[in-house]
Image: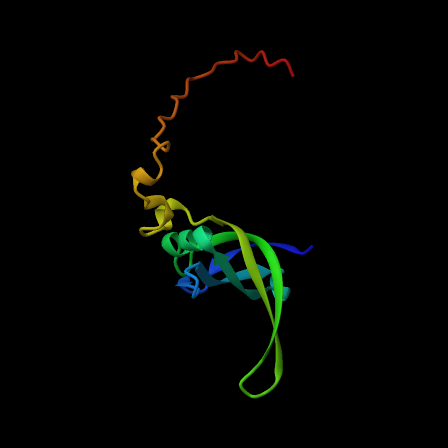
Length: 139
């Protein structure tokens, strides 16, 4: 079993299409940084999300958004146009979490209509009260 967990930024807007059988499929790429200092590098991963997960990624994310992807590695081999045999490593997403903060997102996940999230009523934060310990701290 091979599982992968990636946190990175979308390198382009997700592309949502349908198979001939009408199944939604979303393809996107994630740039993931690794290493530090002189050893710092960026890896690029192609990701595929199927059905409702793919539709959500396409609807609520865009190029530059930070996301977390959990899924399986899939290795494919194919013949390139020049006749050479190529190998491609892709990630098939099982779960995607949107990590871009609300104030940085323009019309994405956090601006979804309230009807889509009926139980997501705004919660009022409790007020903080002053505390005076009189210097009697038991530890």
